[in-house]
Image (cartoon, rainbow, N blue to C red; front, side, top):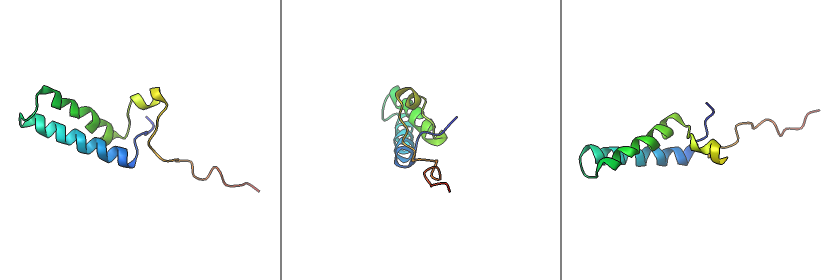
Length: 71
């Protein structure tokens, strides 16, 4: 499983997911708050199954040495 969730995206997913789960656990919002487990999990595992289907990746380039000229 290749990571495809990077920096700011990861922080936002974990924050929003944790907030929704906390609100659901305290009965502030309805059952739909438990859907916060999805962004929470994708942020923690740094992988979003929808991203490869859409051709998206919020990670920076991991192959930094490939553009160096070879002599």
